[in-house]
Length: 491
Image (tube, rainbow, N blue to C red; front, top):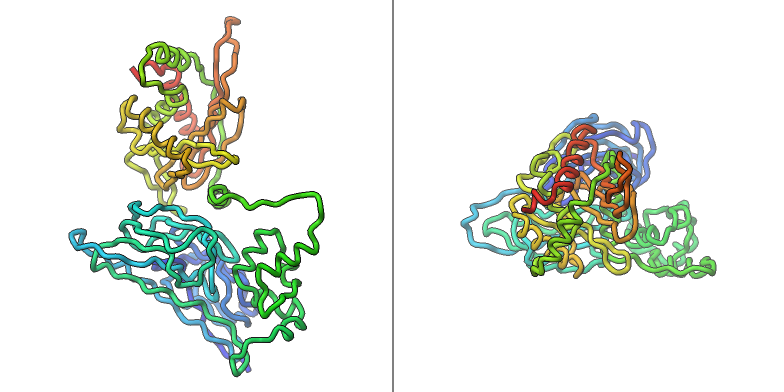
């Protein structure tokens, strides 16, 4: 016996009030499986696929592409079996705030419900440290479901007091992730409930090991596999087709079953190690950037003689202030950014440009084990030469201790590969930054009169959505000009 049920726009993270319908992946009349993507929606942070919370036949769509709907609004009607659990409409959470003069209180941060049916998620990275100031809607940690790794934003402004979980912990939906200090009177969200589970037998008894072992992969599908197992399988490179064919030792397929399967099929001749936490965070950022950034790359040849002369003069002075040639170059970049607002900007969604009042300059710092973190010189445009050099040294030292300082205000990052002997490279832009500048090794080049000079290649990859070729070339040539006249800049 079939009946019609409504499907609703899900609550994606804390504080979200509405979302835009991007497109439909299914047509009325199509048969749809639970957890199968059926449409795409856009929040202020990303475009994502949304899965069906039910098995059934799509009867009709209740909206059209480009409609902006409130959280909990009906998006579709499905025809389902009569005993199928009915999806419940979520409600957007209140964003009420109070005066900054109110006394402070604490609030828990809960693992959010990301779509229907999700029961748990893995903590991938903690992007903030206890004591850090946090703005509402600022990304504070990353979580992984069986489908994707995503940033989770803070529902409050305040100060992070503590984390209640560690990287790689698998938590149930609604579990406490951290504690934040907020203004008293701020409306505090309660923990979200678990996603709707699938129906079981009339007496709600769990299926026995024997009944699951005797079922086929096709009838079990992915629906009976916990998210932690799906995430673990993806980490081990196991396809969905192979995953659903693996027989569990107990009532559910668990990571131990994956290990048992691999131990039987693993060929000899290689070793496997777990990626480090910092590399997993960087990988996540790069994967997300790959789907967002429209890259353009250009190179100029820059005379390095003035930098070397200035560096030699500083060394011979005997002064305790001994900044490097790269620090001088970094100061030239920060100075150029003052004049080019596009290179102090990030794109918010598809149609809004955020331009920062000050320069937050990122500097890539390599760690042992080929890990990479970002040092950040904040408000670099407000610093004179000596203050900039001292701040850069301090921030780079923190980065070498493992402190990744990347934040959403970093619009340009520098990567120095002179010591590696690389003359040319194509740098990668990691969103939300809009440009990365590569500094190559020093080499000899011929002048028109046959004499030689010391030069470097400056290569910049930039986000073409924020700057076009002429604007980018003017910015890069400004950096070149300041570098070739560095003595005037640092005098």
